[in-house]
Image (cartoon, rainbow, N blue to C red; front, side, top):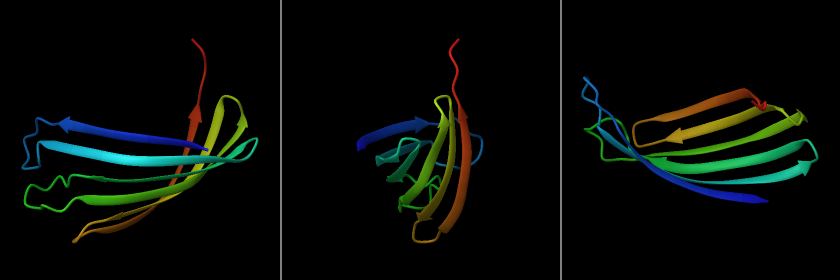
Length: 101
């Protein structure tokens, strides 16, 4: 099982009235189910871009990563995001290709 922690701060120069500094913190875990299938979970919190809101956005992502070859990952996941005024559920999918240069 692998566990990772991440945090960051982004500074934006925007012309709109969005918040300029947005921070992010998350924790993730990954567990191998078979030689080519992993389950992952990622949860965290980040600053709402709306400067009028003092409520952070909280998210949870869970999914599966299928690796039919060493250089290909096929991903399927589900994301839940919440704050006091927002609730979003998103189905995620992706592909990752790796190659040496």
